Structure formats: structure tokens, C-alpha cells
Image 1 (tube, rainbow over the protein chains, first blue to last red):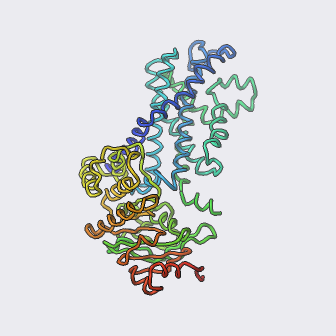
Image 2: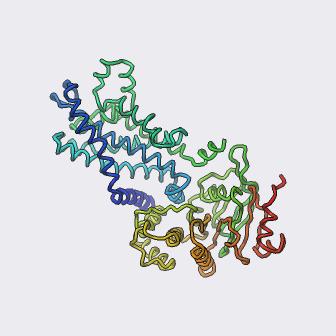
Image 3: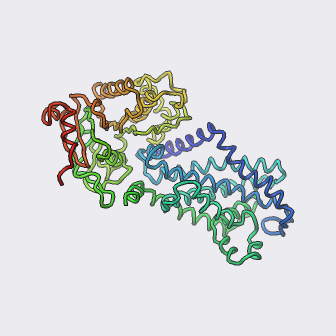
Amino acid sequence: MNAYWQCFSGIVMREWLRFVLQRTRLLSALVRPLLWLLVFAAGFRAALGIAIIAPYDTYIPYEVYIVPGLACMILLFNGMQGSLSMVYDREMGSMRVLLTSPLPRAFLLASKLLATSLISLLQVYAFLAIAWLYGVQPPAMGLLLALPALLLVALMLSALGLLLSNAIRQLENFAGVMNFVIFPMFFLSSALYPLWKMLEASPWLYWLCAVNPFTHGVELVRFALYGQFNLLAMTVCVGLTLLFALLAVWTFNPQHAALRKAN
Amino acid sequence: MNALEVSDLSFAYGAREALRQIHFSVPAGHFAALLGPNGAGKSTLIALLTRLYDVQRGEIRVGGHSLRTSPRQALRQLGVVFQQSTLDLDLSVEQNLRYHLALHGISRRQGSARIDAELARQQLTERRHERVRNLNGGHRRRVEIARALLHEPRLLLLDEPSVGLDPASRQALGQHIRQLCNEHGISVLWTTHLLDEVQPSDDLLIVHQGRLVASGRAEDVSEEHGGSLGSAFHRLTASGVAA
């Protein structure tokens, strides 16, 4: 058991050191959501009125609505980017070192996903701190309750990223992931607009949003931030995290990629 | 006991056969050079030895443990230096080594003594806190060797370790590794496509088109196939192998 703990803490420590040493990584992770919050949301506020919907108990400005979605956007980008690099590194580089560890491969991959998710949380809380200063101030208890929700969503998205990168050969570069995974998942979700608004616009778009796992991630975080529990979102996120993680570990076989390339 | 035993090993990428019935062993304390032109199947063999690929046919045993049935015990006996550098450039030498110890489940306290010993052996003690990015190619290789030996493996696998090094560093590296073999009884499998990295007293394995075409002491192989290592290698790898 001790060997497993040593290994896991070593993997987390490495991610932490890399994060601390590459300060530009934090900066670039923050620029994207902050642009959305400070520029897009400010401009959009005039165009979009938000009715009173759960978990909010009053009318809210658009900036307040958009913050949970932007927090999840950080997790989405990090999850996809991290998983893509795991696949890219599989045949050369750091993943080869990881895979020479005598501990089970499933444990190593799960540790790696969890470690990158924990580092993502630091970026999310840095973003929430800036949003707080800007005036989006969820209750302090909500910020604490959001922690497990954010961790679960981070794990779900990282596992999905790893699964997609394993399975789809075309997703070899980040541009492909942006166009075919990140943008559709982000825009077809409740991150930028509530689903009832979407229903007004188009029923089939509404349904696409409703079945999007990212929507459930955003809603889980949104409810947690305001001290409420969303059972549906929680169930979907837990179920999908387990499913994605199992499939991702199962399909993470460098040999499959080599054989696919050869054929 | 042999540090490495490979028996009847075959591997195919779909219809294309990359390795065919490879059979060899590396005894304890021996330096074995695996020589082959580019595309001979060396990389596939390394991928199988490091468990990147699964064994399709045949058997690999490291320190007596089968890589297929007891991979954990087998990997404990194996230290690897990959062809491309796998160090974290922004981390210090010590941080890189600590990460490796953690991957092998070795505690910090136990690991500190091993780091001290390996850094001293590789003459890197004073570089301990330096960022890897600031080291030259030869020193980076030595850090990778220190890392590969931290968990005290029986077998050290080096995949074309001299790539990217200047001639002086290449020679120093070869001497250093042979010294490890002689003084500490570590077995080494060193892959290369450069003839001048092989010494007459080394164990020599020549692969060509996925087959092991010669094995034995380098000087014996040379004598048997043409007098010098160059002519033997040329003769053994010049033409296609009959099926």
C-alpha cells in the first residue's frame, strides 16, 4: 500500500513542480476565461436577461451566471490538453518512463489523471478569486462545496479526453480537439446560456445540450457553488467518470496505436 | 542466472513481421551490444522489453521473471535509458531522480541514500540541484543512467544512448558503462547501429530484417564472418535474409 502512496504522491509532486516552474501556464489558463468574463459577459449582459432559475434565488447579472461555466471551461481545456499529451508521449518521452514503473498500468494512468485534475483545480480557484474581486461572489461555503464537484468534473473531462485521444486517430493535434470536442461541448451546454433559453431557440439544440456531459458538469458546479445539490448532475457525472475512466484505461495500449499505424 | 532471457520472440505489425524467432540471453555482469542497421527491429525489441508492447509470441524473462506473467517483478529488475531524453528539463537533477524513486514505490528516506550513491557514482554530486536544462548532453545522459540504476536493477537497457553526443562523450559513456558491468556485476544491453561502439570482448548480437543473424563474443563473430567486425557486419546485413 505504501508503494502505491509513494508512487501517487510522486506523480502529484511532479505535476505540481512543473506547474510552479512554468508560470506562463497559469497565466495562459487564466486569460481565456477572464476574457469571457470581463469582455464577452460585460457586452452580453445588455442583450441577455436571466430569469430567476435554480440555484439562484434572485435575478442575477450575466457575469454571475457565466462563472461556473467558465470554471468548467478551464477544466475542459486542461483535461483535453493533458490527455492528448499523454497519448502523444506514449511512445516517446515522459509516459514511457511512467510505464516502466512496476505498479499496475491502470493505477499509473488513474494517478496521472487525478494529479493533472488537482493542478487544474488550482487554476480554477485562481480564476474564482479574480472573479470575486470583479464582483462575482458566491457564498464562502459554496466555494468549499464546489471543490469536490470541480474535482469530479475535472476527472470526468480528463478521462473523456484520454478515451477520445486513444480512440480517434484524427485527434492528433490540439486544433482538431478544439474544433471537434472543446468548442461543441462548450457551446452546446448550459455554460453560456440556461437551457430554457435554448429551448426557445431550437428544441433539437436544447436536447443536444441536455445530453451533453459538460452541461451536467457545469450544473453540478453551479449548484454546489450556491450550496445546493443537483442529484441528476451528480449521478451523470459519477457514472460517466467511471465509464470514461474504465474505457480510457482499457484502450490505452501503445501497441494498438502502433498496429493501427502499420495497417 | 541470466539477467535477460529472450526466447522464440516474434512480433508482427498486422501482416508485417518485425521480429522473427529471436533467441538470446545476457548473463550476469556481461555487456551485450545489440547491433543492427536502422529498421532491423531494434526499436520493436526495446518496446517489447520495456513492456510498451505486449509479447505476441515467445518469452522475455528479466532476472528470471517473465514479463508476461509477472510483469511487476520483471520491471523491478530493469533499468532503462531511452534513446530520446525523458528527463523533465525544468526540474532539477534531484527532482527528476525523486520522481523515478516514487514510481518504483521507494520512500523518500530510503531513496535519499540511493540518490547520494548514484550521483557520486556518476560524478554528478555537485550538479544535484541544477536544472537539467542547464546540463550538457553528456551530463544529461549520466543523469538518465543514474536514474535507471536507482532502484538497483540487474539489467540496464540502453537504447542508442550515444545519439546526439560528441565523440569524446560517446567514448566516455561506453567506458563508464563497461566499468559498471565489471565492478558492480550489472548486466547491460546496449543497442546501437555504430560499429565502433562494440569492443572485441563484448557479447554481440546482430539483428537484420527482424532476425538475429549472429551472436557470440564480438571477436569470435568477427573471425567467423570475415576477419574484422566491419566486414562481418557488412556480410551479415548486406543482403536480404532467406525466409
